[in-house]
Amino acid sequence: MFELELFSNASARPSLPTGVTRLEGFALEWQDALLAALTQVIAAAPLRHMLTPGGQRMSVAMTNCGALGWITDRRGYRYAALDPRSGEPWPALPEVIRKLAAAAGLAAGYASFEPDACLINCYAPGARMSLHQDRDEQDFGAPIVSVSLGLPATFLIGGLTRRERPLRLPLAHGDVVVWGGPARLAYHGVAPVVDGLHPKLGRQRINLTLRRAGALKLNGN
Ligand code: SIN
Ligand code: FE2
Image (cartoon, rainbow, N blue to C red):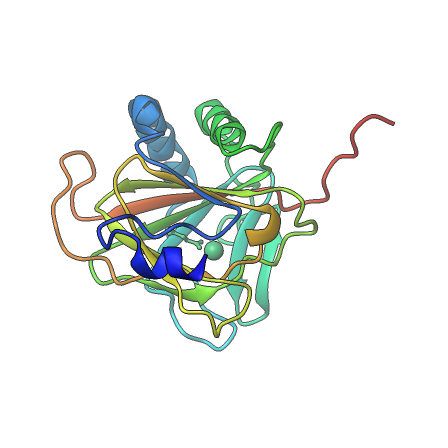
């Protein structure tokens, strides 16, 4: 194994960690409906720069749709059913996002993925997301489905500890990454987004992170 890796063709793609799947261009056929749905969500629950528990303003602007939304402020990271800005529930999860998440989950080997939370991350040039684990969910049995739109980015995906050097995975408009199972708690992040102009989205990258945040429903009885 070791020799194979050492002497394999240098131009071959590095293999992704077990449990991580990249679906190139998977969201492209849904893009118009997705962008229309996102415009509506953002009109109802505007993007905002949240504060980390340490008091730093995040470079990524965020909002949510779905039953639960991920938030951060001085009190910590958590999921909330209400948008703290408006005191209203987050906009419902648009049907197109629900369908895309289920289809991407299935394509990556996870049947019946039913997200209840969609975090919308908006990166202006220079914005980044430092390495972290997604661990505010009640159950790690469901995968994470992550949809990239707009400017390209370099996704960093590592192992279960901070010590493992992350792989740098280029993500383009329409790419979807799914991680779960043995990689559910993999450290991941996004390198600073390089300035550019995307034909549909302009100078920004939008990422949708779909998760099952509440307890998983039990199958059968
Ligand atoms: C995240 O980890 O929440 C964001 C990932 C991404 O923007 O690709
Ligand atoms: Fe994350």
